[in-house]
Image (cartoon, rainbow, N blue to C red; front, side):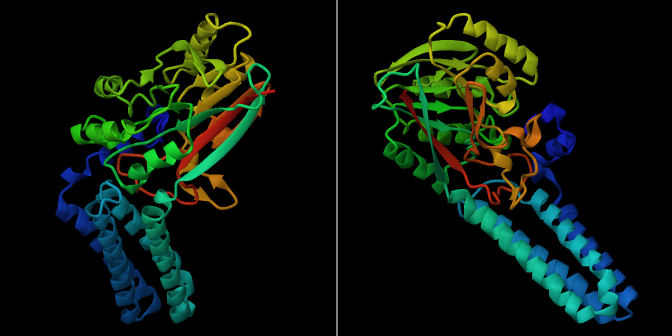
Length: 388
């Protein structure tokens, strides 16, 4: 959802960014109207007003439960997205299920309603799981790579990648992160963009919380970062925070790094929508890198992989896709925000001499989206690089 200018729902997302301005009566009237329509249709089609009342009241009860859950999330420090857009989306989904069951309800009203109630309860369970449980199940993914251009086969270089933090406020997910990273004993930490939620991209308290979080991360080789999506990462707001913390932002720069007896070149590119231009800038930066160097590219999206592979980049770290954030078992990501869709949705890929790792990230999409993860837990990437 973050190639915003290319996204077909961009205008709708902009409308949902500040839903607090939506009239409360207008928001409440939509579920009431949906309930009335469902009740009238069920009553007329089945010829039994009782089934109509059940349809209307059942919908309103489930929507009321959704409202209670979504309203509780910010109050209890779970997540800080708006209530109205996901509430209305859930109301429409539930309404659609009730209407879709009408043809069967004409012949078998009671069994049909038992099935509809079961589906509605399953939706409630999934929403509760996706908002309150999975976002806090941070996984550490370990990747071990060897390369002849790295020294000391028996002494690996440990790199931790963090991506797509999307901080809104500090929750127990963010508060657990520093100790988790410290336990990995990284020699180097790299950040691959999207530090604040879109909705909170210039909000002072979110910036303060981000500084508190990043200030607890330490590595002897330092912390290096690149900007994420232009609409998410506002350098005018973030630069001062990162500078105060001594985090080096690589804006179209290649730097030589010597850490843990290993020598490599870090290349950081600012992400734009013009992949061809970004690829040309990468090619130009490589002119300053020795031919025998091990190269590590930081670029927010995985969309530069074809160019990186053709240029012989050794390791390329990206994020942006969130792994889909909402995944379907057996299918995986439905939306990846990558121009290559599922080709680089998440995980480890290798093309030619180039290894790419696409992190699922830690946070959520902003705007009016439901702050949830489904079958796509947040991720910290721990990479071990050794000579061969």
